[in-house]
Image 1: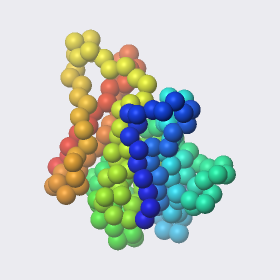
Image 2: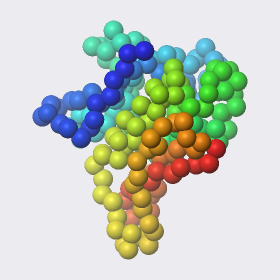
Image 3: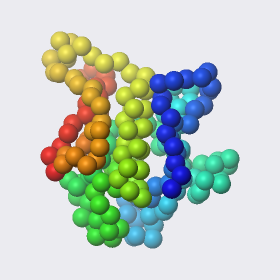
Length: 188
């Protein structure tokens, strides 16, 4: 499977930049999630344009010059799980797609939840790292722990999915509505 990721840290003055691309299976809206034929293989492109990050999806790679079928604004993501075995839908996903948890990524967005299934664990880890970097480098301000009374951490994603731990990215909002990002390693 041909896909690629480019670091979001080096900018060459372009207004729109492709950070990652490749094929993933995408879950349908909640009312169709248990219909296996509603899950579609789509070509995804993670883009950084004008200081905002979008995950756009297309029918296939050849259609990327047309309008995307849809887009997910990363500013709306509140939770991202790598190996979502703790999610209530995991058992159904596993039974119907016969996939390992290491091949699945879950994302909670303001208006809906998404499952993404990759060809292998390396593909999904690549996407997790690219999305994690984008989420942590979007415009925001971290609060001083003394201001809010809680400790905030930003740490790197796991080096490899071969570890015995799952990973989770989550957004916590405090009373002042400021964003605090954390990366939590979850026991299997």
